[in-house]
Length: 280
Image (tube, rainbow, N blue to C red; front, side, top):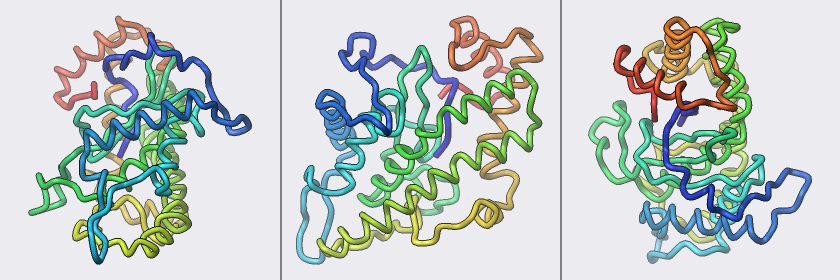
């Protein structure tokens, strides 16, 4: 569930889109932006069918636009927390779920894997994700993408050698901690009351959901991650190493807010040498 700042994807027809208008927290979302949000949610459900229906204690029900998570996603895709609309991308992510913030040249997107791909999931790996898992991960990424400006600033500092590796990793994790708190707030205030009302049948994959009732401080939250071969050293340490290798090899460093084609080509060369994919 991480920032993929150096990704090459199709612009999803953004250049032809009429959604040039932007929204801020102080401005109401326009009908055009809300319509965009609906289209993205419908596309997401189409691509991830398990998001479209849920089991109760008595029956199977289809998701509707009155469900709180549907409305939440519409507004986030419409750009409620960002300077521009967010797009759904059905491409398989490198992690369970991920996002890429918008730059001057690329739109912001979120991606959620249809199947469980975590190596720590044991026998669950490769299985289709359940309704609650998919929605929790999508909502986390829709919250997480609102911190894209901070991620991009950190990455530019890494590219220019003005931040140390450990500081980069921890500062990146702090941005995701904000998304963790926002996601837990949504879970407690909107998901839980809805689930009780409809008598949602609990998923057997609850251990994979991206929310819980416990909202920890950053220090308490990060203290739970002790394996330096896992989060947050992966992926953020890898991002830092890739930026360092780029700077060592090519010297001149553009900023991620205005990337050039030469930069992307150079990063592809770095990718081949340090093995781990850096273009998500």
